[in-house]
Length: 378
Image (cartoon, rainbow, N blue to C red; front, side, top):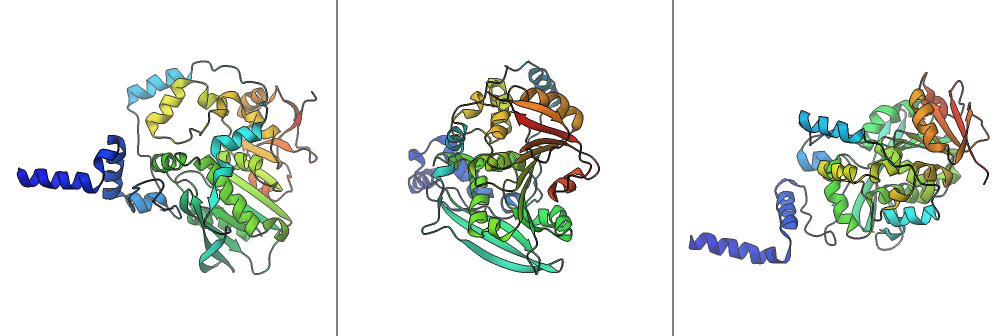
């Protein structure tokens, strides 16, 4: 007993147990046991977020859900989600400033010196090559990754891909990236989020430093695009985000220098629906989800603000019947709905069907059904 007590006391002193809350202590112990690298402090540890995050932490890739709700809780949630939501507010004032503050975009700092890209490896890829890239940041201290597939001769078009959960840049290249590379695009895919539960932990550490993951992913894309001078190298630079990646693409369209087009498949839930109800915030917390921002800007804004303030032309790509009802209602206070795709527009809703995504990405828009959004005159 004396020996055990001595060992426990020694461990408590060595690891500063009494200087940390029980929650932080549990987190540190858990990461030391199952994580690739202990998160001893958000200010001291440098995370490597390249590749499949779940493979590094849990030995499984792609990531699966770590939380399932019992049937009775699913039924309770079904009833809660059916409750009416408050009306969305009018267009927000100083939206870009508020968005920047909510995600800490301007708080992000590159590694000491000027931001630079490291080429980790280069491999043959469908008659061209694919480079594995890495870029380091000092705030937060993290190493982020991407893959850039290039033809021998630079084509006119570059496709930038922001994937959904349960994926990474390597998987993008094996699927969608390979398809569009064969179609003539160079492809630049980023390692962003793999699993919401794991990212909840990482993002909590980043938020203590004034940075949110939803600001870091757009900043990563903007920095790589700037350093590689893609706007000068290519005639068209198109950003495609799917699911969670679509949400970051929407932020990117507002916070970064303009791209030729930003396409969002998914990510079309209105932010005020996620945040106006305390019940939904509790549910997000219960799932270990990590989209809570640094400041509560979504409670006073709407998806209309993302479209109205975008620096880049934007298109939401989704289900026609859903968009003709829900999205039309969301956009109506600020935009006129015009059936059909008007080339001179800057915001569109495109309906899925007959490889509509491919026709949007290549710029032809041939046969794509949808609507053009035109700002109402004040």
